[in-house]
Length: 286
Ligand code: GPP
Ligand code: MG
Image (cartoon, rainbow, N blue to C red):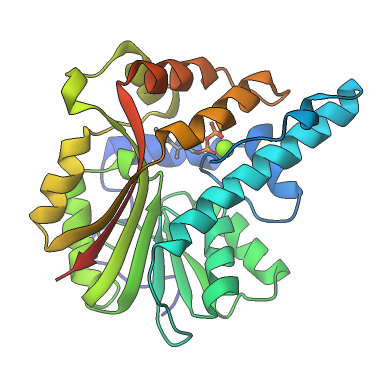
């Protein structure tokens, strides 16, 4: 496969997709770059687990540095948790990172499984950044990033043992997305998703969820939509993990950090009032 695989339609199909690409092409937030600088794994997802309260002690400089390292550790723990749910992956399997950002999770997956990975993103800057990281890590032959739309990759049918999305599904229609994943996965292949989703039980979109949508130019889906769209596309859930309680400490630490972006209180409100969940869903392609 090459980075310029021809597809029948342009990568950016709509004005909305162009605006999302523009956001990520311009994005250089310290909360992502300084954390990635810790060890060269650049993430675009949030963290899980408890934080060590001692990171908040010491001089202001020491504290900033310790908090950044701790948040990065929690984000890496989230990616590890996701990869734990892909099942048995062998070195001759192929994995797809759909919405691959700056590529941190793809590098972790290759390190863990030794198999080829394709990452796709509609941000050309992210593809370039992630490709440079793969070169720096000495794995550019096996971990490839492509400027492609995950709704229409053009990759061959039944070619992937596993696909994951780590906080990228809020940018797309889930029925279209899972139709493409269903096409790409081999029979028995596994899809793993970590996402924020709104709570059908509390009703329509809360103010806090609307603020998150506005902040990232995304459209957070209700929880039910994930299961409806999976069922419609031959994806059968095997594991559902509510990570909400496990991500709250990350947001509490982030709110106290020097790299807070202003969206922290909306996440804390949404999670604590129950209008929003942080979920992992793993599903098999039948
Ligand atoms: C993570 O990216 C956020 C998203 C991809 C969009 C929204 C996700 C939800 C779960 C609602 P990031 O690491 O670039 O965000 P930030 O810059 O805030 O750390
Ligand atoms: Mg981030």
